[in-house]
Length: 291
Image 1 (cartoon, rainbow, N blue to C red):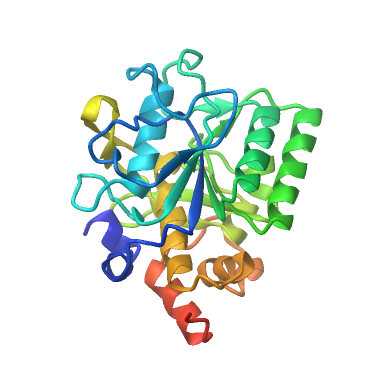
Image 2: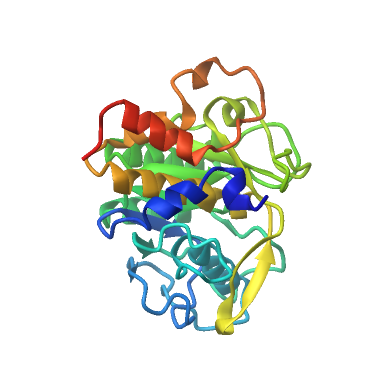
């Protein structure tokens, strides 16, 4: 069973590729916009310190941003999951192409991330894909980030965040904020991956999605495989975008509820349930929100 089938995305993707008015914010690295499977897609740059398009194709920042963008926006039929290419992508990079050490989980200072969340919300995003870890935490930085997440909540912008790949039990300002949706990673059989972080906030309000050896796009017109919670987040974001495309008049709270469930605060486990994209669609449909 492939990752799309594991989380019941295939029937939803057969129904729709998404609507252009549903805008996804990508806070990550820059994107190889010249990739043949991305070149004609509806991708826009949000002004920030870093350019939206890659200038150093071999950089980790470019590789990571392009990978995530491909999962969401690649042309259908490409090697990438290509979950919601009919939607729009707002790219707001926070990773400099020359400033990252080797590794699979880029990180950002809380202050930089806070600014990016506000910028992306102001640009019109309805849901933000945040596949990044925090570096150099501080009391002042955490305070800025908390206020940025509060701002996203006030603007009704969903924020879906990676749980992290340290294999620990705990939380961060990102995963414990009541508005965020943390995403842990599972293997192709739906079993929790050992390196995925867990915790009470992740278990109560989060979701589990595929994070084992996912194939998507890379710079230079190539492809690459990658894993972890960074790769798991786009499955949730893409599913939300597709459901929102089917019910465009819905509020962010209604979309979030359809995915995480009315009883999520009663969850006692530190491990979240597996994403079920079709069940979320059915929940919205049964609530009579079809437009």
